[in-house]
Length: 297
Image (cartoon, rainbow, N blue to C red; front, side):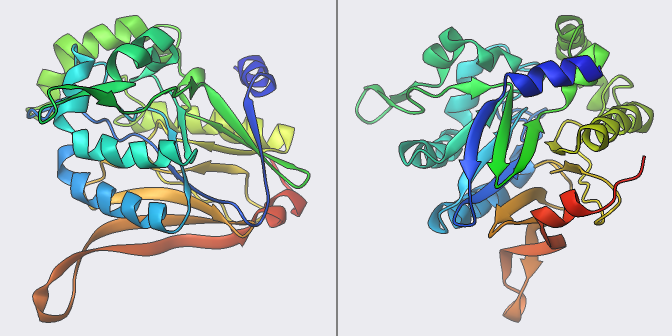
């Protein structure tokens, strides 16, 4: 598994950043087709409120895999049609060259240009009665490196070191599409899923933490749906969590050379008015602090 991560690291897209750059990292939205199995529906308004904030504040949006639920949904066009307002927000980021997408196991198909061209480059506008531009010329990567000063911040979805969700992904997709999604609807969780099985997620996270310390690289992933923000001196592995938590969505922010774990959720304000609010879970810690701390296995 270590060799696989080394290979992915060497072939990663690289972006040089400085203290003027701002990034928000989200993953595991699992946008579906709007039916009862669509896990994105519950937090859709929270997600769009967060994205509107980040767009206005000049952030680049990094979607770290499993943005779309392409295992359960057969017709990918249904995802865009159901969540067109969300995709129109993503379009705004893309038009400003502030959208970077990484594929995960559930949307691995997006690594193929033919899939992007067929389902995501255009959309059908019911008013103009013709196809309009959506995420034109989008390229979806397997991984990303943000180079900050002398430091490399390595980003992957995280399924690459999970046998069932990488090497055997077609078999796993079959099980999810035709077996486990129906059991999940009655409360029985998929035992092979890193997001739903603590034993599997612990194994995946242990491997990523070990690699990050051995190679002295900050490693940011999703996949397990568990937000992780290590204390300085206790590791270099971060996880942005997911956008389908029952109490909101979690994400990581990078700005001014600092990294922060954030939650967006529904809050109750004055006069019992409900609004979408942002709260800091962990941070903000300077990136350099993590690298310059003595790391122990």
